Length: 455
Image (cartoon, rainbow, N blue to C red; front, side, top):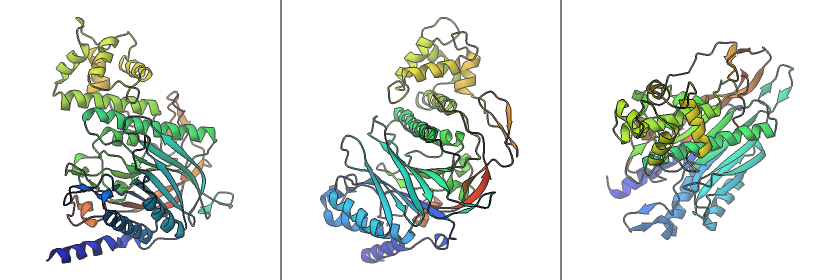
């Protein structure tokens, strides 16, 4: 096959729509997340420059991206790395998506980084009730968008036989790239900020139970603490749910969605779903568990320490067989975890309180094992009609009429098809990420008690 034939074949593949997404019932909605690779970051190896210096290239590539988005016609489109610093490219997306009946929301990264987020909502499916911009103001100048939407048509009747519009919260974000191990805690903190902001928004607006969908480039795989953190908060990965993949190691590399600048392929693009029937831990509890997980990773995988040596490191110069608060803080500083956009002083005190289980002012070896090295899993199987009230541990019975609307994951597709097999095709040129599209169907579900807000 000649080079021309290979290019033409690649173009045909990029225009082809996934067959499983062609048929949708009228009540289903769909969501696409796609990091479209800003021209200011795309390397043109043949010309030893960035794509932003070649208008013909970036214009053509973004036209093809929009062609694909319009062909898929998702209800919600969440894009990352949109070159918001270029008016011509922004106008291209505004014109073509606007003409296709989408309402657009843009948010640039802070400190004039040049790129940002774009979320497009199809007016046939949703009305936007409110939208908020979340600026992390931390390393990497990352941001997030929160959209409060309502279905444009009634999904189903409630128990009083009246038709209702379902409301949902949608988030679009792009977390910092983990250039080194110390940035894992920054990514975790960014997710914590998103979830805390959602809690605050729900309480301020006195919102009832509703599904939450988180979209974006999370710059981390299923093996990382961000994935575990979101799972501990009741979120499920829509793609893994649709394909019945577990969280076990054997399913960790079944699919990929990104080839990074180092040439590594990995799965980092997710659409997370949280339904109102999920029992959630307090946000602060999940945060503490995830931070302890990162501490263990840095001690075990990066520093290559055994359990005994890790305890000795945290014990520092103490002659007693325990860890003091000062030595704990000192060693976390050495690990690069203490900073305003990582673990701040108040959060350090919370971690210490969690580790010092008996409250005697020091952490002994047993407490070190319990919190950091071999934490016990607190997950419990949910019963059909009861859940744990995490405020005091007592049981709360759900009333039969306590129900809300949520979503079930109907289908999920990554493009091109090879990435669903863990492969990255050389002739794919839309981006260094694969677009992920998920189809959801509305469903009536029992509603769980709301988790108390984290202060």
